[in-house]
Length: 151
Image (cartoon, helix red, strand yellow):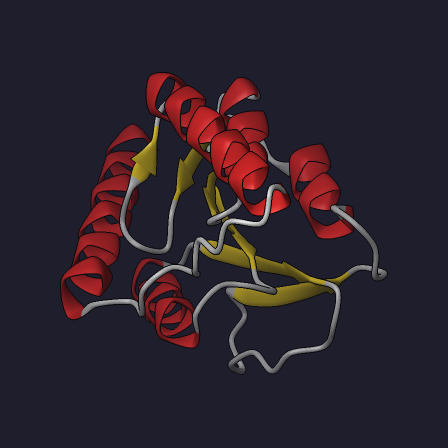
């Protein structure tokens, strides 16, 4: 039971929540990024730095993730791949992806890509709200509690 973090795009406030949870519950956290980033001095947190390139960090996570793991990512195709391997995927905004929700999210993502390719300005996501931070922390706690009961 480990937490994998698609760390390049994960907000710092979410990483801080994860780091505190790792210390509290003694769960291993592995950040995967294509550039160096500081991590807290903890035996429960480590960084895997991969080379730059399209989906290199995502591929590393998919290769190493196991059924009991949680992946924190906003990358919907990555979420779909880890769900196929039997792991769970949690968006930094607190949405737990499932087999059914990830399919609809992929369809929406593809639609928005088509819109952007045709010149439509779609804008980016809004800033992370306090409610979304709390939702993320709640979902993380649920996963940690369920994992410790199973151990």
